[in-house]
Image 1 (cartoon, rainbow, N blue to C red):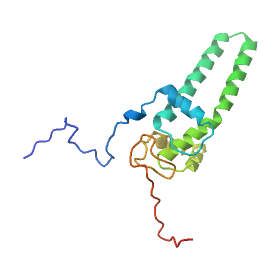
Image 2: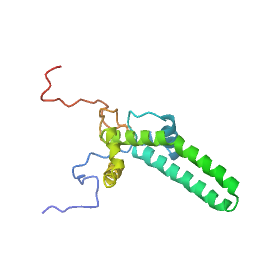
Image 3: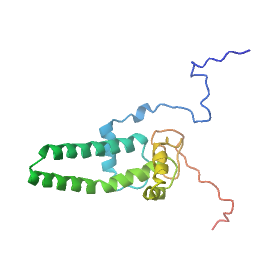
Image 4: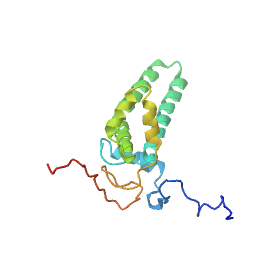
Length: 167
């Protein structure tokens, strides 16, 4: 009887998942990913990696907590609290478009249409969006572009419609 070595991951199958390839050439830091979100300010096409999406969300959370902390510290200085609140509202309004854009690009990366984002406005269905946003990228190119991790051959072949008569 053949013995099974569960500690040796080189010979263990990955249970139907695609093969793991470390993306050494695409190792970008947090601030590079955040900068990528702001440079693609209103770009709703293409794909966004998980790190790009979640670093942007983390950055926005840190900014929110910073403003909240300063707001608490100002305590009784009402004029400064109003100014700080106005600055935060301006920041929040300025980041609405890149937030939606990176979410749609992230959905594209998982192989879904950007219109799936509208499920976020349905109370229980927003959990489905959260699950979609945590999924890994689709291995190869899709209709929204090549894999941002550099995986696959970069060629997208559209699925053939069985009822396509050439028109």
